[in-house]
Length: 338
View (spheres, rainbow, N blue to C red):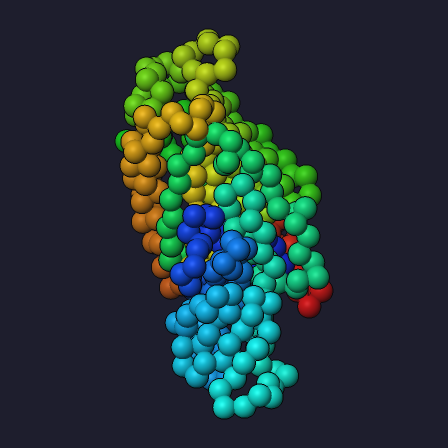
């Protein structure tokens, strides 16, 4: 099989930022190879404009807000939240081409989503469900990764790597040895793994207070092209109760063809005010993610050097290959539409 694709899919809703990260300060962010500037109006509505002034191409993110108007910091071209230019220096007439592209934006359950492609296709109903980010105890973080987004997706849908890459955190020998079930329904890929009477990794010893042996399940939903939910349950072996449940969530947003944004959350099905383990959860997840980042950036470097590299796949790759096929279908459909 050929190397992982570096195609950037634009006709999709992507996580642009957690709600708390967007305010009255201008935030520059490239999403699906589109340079954007994010901010809120005085009334709190999130806005995403192209981060380029049509006059001389200066970054609008280096400008300033004047009430709800964005003023270019180079020559003072001024834009309203729709991207319409409302003032230029030295004259009353405004060139018709003096516009900044406005991107569709939806804020929902603590997340700001943007649509980087054809705005006529931006149906908010296509945004994956994620209400529990606002309802359960939730901690999160962000990482910029120097690797194409499909490598992040490969990493997350094939958790057999936990055995070898994360043995001191969430890995155990049984993860790589346990068969998976995989299926696709439209643009949603599901991958399940259930383990019984297995070793309890340090992550769950510390977070859930469990010791070996445990029963452990991993249920993945990948909403192509960029949203991932891993629902986990761990419990003492033979315990048929609810166990300790978490959701590990990733907004997988391409920055460019070879770099990515990873917005992550760990959600626990407990009272939102129960914050006793929050700091430890963030510390442990950050450590796991850092191990992933080192591996993914090494993979990207290898792909860049070995552009014609081919791959050999085995049974544990079924979920990853299925995800790649779904992504290829979306990319092909977008190319045909263009």
